Image (cartoon, rainbow, N blue to C red; front, side, top):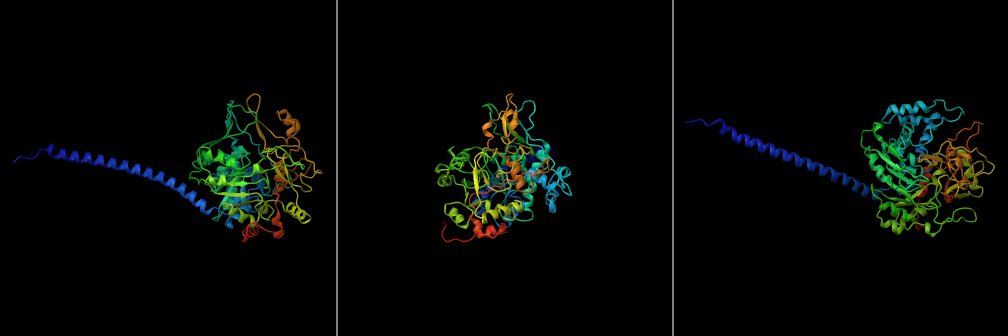
Length: 531
C-alpha cells in the first residue's frame, strides 16, 4: 500500500487556509463598513434627537444677556437653578475677569473656575498677571491690550495676540463654568456680533465649559453656525470681519486655532439662537450654507441695550428713531421656517408670557426685570437711584440713535451723575476699544477708529466728523455701571451709563429688594386671559 504524498495532504489545507483568510478579511471589512455607517447614523440621530428634545424642552423664560457684567455668572446661575435659561453676557468678558481679579477676586470665584481650566499653565499666567490679593487700593486698573489682528506680510487674515486669546478663552470658560458649577440647569452666553474680533475665542472658552446655548445679536451672525461646528471639533476657524472702505477682493478675517489650548475631550455643540428683529433676517440666515440654526429670538425696538436700526432714517420730534409696521417681525413667516422662537422687547410680565405662548412662541426673553434685581451686576447705588427715580415719577429711557460707536440705536436711562447728565464731562479716550470700527487704510492695511475717541485721532484716521456728534464711550460707561470703571489720572472714575428697556411696569408688582427668583415667580404667575 502506498502512502499518500505530502502534496496530496497539504494541497487542501492550503486551499482551506486561503479561503479562511479571504472570508475573514471580507468579514472584517464588512464590520468596519457597518461600524462606520452606524457611527454616521448615530451622529445624525444625535442631532435629530437634539432638535426634538430642544423643541420639546426649551425653557419658557430666557434671561437677557446684558453687558457689560450686568448679566454675570451669579445672575445666570440663579435663573438656571430655577429651571429657566440663565445667560451670561460675553461682551467685554475678558476685561471683566481681568478687573475682577485686580479687585481681589472677592469670594475666590474666578480663581476657583480657573483651577478647573484644562491648561493650568495658561490659567496660572493669567492669575500672575492680573490677580491682586489685596485689590488695587484705589489705583487704576492694569491695562489690557486693545483688540487688533496680528497681520503679517500684508496678509488680511490673522489672530489676536496670544495673550488676548488666552484671556478671552479663559474668561469665556470661567463665566460659564461658574454659572453651571455643580448644577444641572442650562446656561447661555450672549454676544454682540458687532464685536467680531472676540467671537471665536470667547465661544471656544464657553464651549469648553459646556455652554448650552449661544445667543448673538447686533449684527448678522451668518458665520456662527459653521464656526460652532468647527470649534466643537477643535478645528481652526475664521470669521470674516466687516471693514469700512474694503474692496470687492478683500477678505479681512479673524482666525483662531484651538489646538494650543490642550483640550482633548470632544466638545458639546450648543444650540444657536440668533437675535433678530424682522423676518427678512431670519429668511437670510435660514438660507445660508454651513452649520445649523436651532431657533430665533425676535426682539422688538423697546428692548434695552442696542436695537436694530429702523427701516426709516427719519427721527421723531424727540430726536429718537421712528419705528413702524415695516420694523415688525412677521411671525407667520418665521413660524413657517419650522424652528422654535422667543419674543423679546416689552414682554416682561405674566400676561406678556401668556400672549407670547398664544402667538406660537416657546417663551420670552426678558432683560430689564433681571437687570434691576439685586442679583444683577449693576452697582447697588445705581440700582437704588433708578428705583428712586421710578418711585418719584418714572424712569426716562431714550433711544439714542447716535451715542453708540456701533452705529446701532442704543437705549439710555436719563440719570443724574451718569454720562446722560449734561453736567457730567468726561475726557475723550478710547482705551477699551470693543466697539471700534475696522477700516481699510489707503495702503490696504487694517486700521481701527471710534467716533468717541479724541476728535483729532478720529479725523486723522479718515473718520467723518458728522459721526462724532453725540457719540459716547459706551464701553467705559457700561464698565463703570458694574463697578469696573477705570480710574483716570486726576483720581476720578469713569461715569456710568445705564441701559434698560422702555417697559418697566413690572416694578409696580415687585418689592424694592427683589431677586431673580422673585422675578421668575412674578413672570410665571398664572393668568386667565393674556392682554
